[in-house]
Image (cartoon, rainbow, N blue to C red; front, side, top):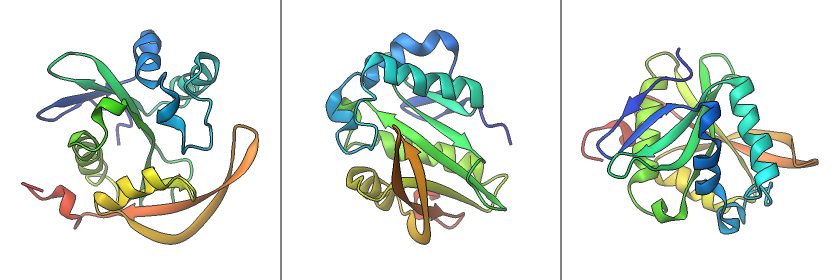
Length: 178
């Protein structure tokens, strides 16, 4: 599977993150409220976001989310097989500018990414900090199901318990008109 495809929907395009995208992506991420429930609450700061951004470049799989109408980068997401089991791929590290919270953007991003991933894998997983209720709610809203898997991951120098959600080919999200 190509971990950095270009995927286009009606309102957004996802395309590989490039070194020159730092300023535009940081502009979308430079809002403390965006990270308020995230274990890395200081990721809105330039130095912390730079480390996150550099990880995308080093690891690969990072996708910039570009709003078609304005051409503005409004967030990013990433594919990874690092923590995935057999027949799985992970989608994670997703953030959206607050101007796109609560609307159709997250659903469109996830529909495109999950649809692409399920052409190659049996299911998609998502790791999220147990306490990140905003992200957990967004996953449940698109039909991801909480599994019994738990992982402890070092985030910003501290161990953080993460729960794992999964979604497969029968997800309502993938049906037309949902």
